[in-house]
Length: 453
Image (cartoon, rainbow, N blue to C red; front, side):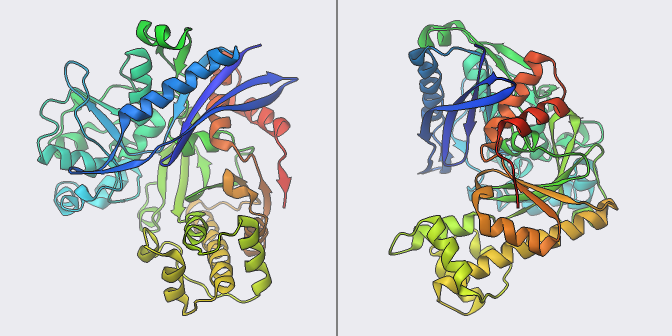
């Protein structure tokens, strides 16, 4: 039996998922799970990368314990964050989190060097204060780059720790705001304009490419050797890789964030796309994920967290459905980014403290935002779309799926739930079996219960 290991790490937790093919269907098995928590230090909001790598190793050791040795291993994580290494390959600490506010003082300065319009025309990445470009400029200003030799994003850093090899991967690199969308390489003109050195950045490697074998030190610790490759290392890129769609379909990667978009082969760098806040993130096979972000299940996760009496998500869904009434609000309102109390924050926006009304308003507002995004995508691309594929954990919400269908008027499918890990594994199988993305997506369709809404 040939096994593949996906290490899928989010901003709050990570897991190791083993997979194999059986009768041309994927079989997934979660073998390890761990927490990935932010730390508030004297320096700001940081990641505990030592603990993170320790958990990566612990999950790999689990393969040996259960007697299922993977042929290959690949890692995906969230985007924009990174680790700097010095000339001795030692970490330059701390490792900041994108939620740290150290970029707030450099946004205007970066704008004076490279305007948002100019940056979008080159990179196609929407302006967000936590983007890597602003983090790196803040690091330049405080001297953290003086001794830096390598820039590695989180999956690349963890792959380096496993192999001793420093490489940069394409899909995650595009989230930095420093990759030229047309040329698909680091944009040296922007790098120089910001006073950064291009020596920090390695040539970009594609998903499914070879990183290296486990180092001798890691082999000794985990008890076996395996090959590390690059998945589409940005988690959304992996999720979209596993989306069972055709070229003329839309997708929603539904989790803490809802990312709604379509796959395109050439970036859309127009002023209209920029003004509408669309982004062109890299995908597998040099495709682009033309998408925009909405707050997503973050609303419901925090409502549930703030409840005095804990309800299940099904209870919350039924409470919303039975309410019947609702009021629209902007799901991306700044008051909802990190509120002390989500129930109170939404309540203020709609003038109510009734839980059912608040929940139903959140459902309808999110579905309405999907419809607005669909219309914008169709206007910008000049194409009409018939089907929306919802993947990720949020696709289990039957009420939101139905509202998405009703608001957009599109055919809607739901699944797979484990889209990110599945896409990670699919990229490994594409390399191992020498199969195309289209063939890989047919395997996904056969392997999971894809529901028509």
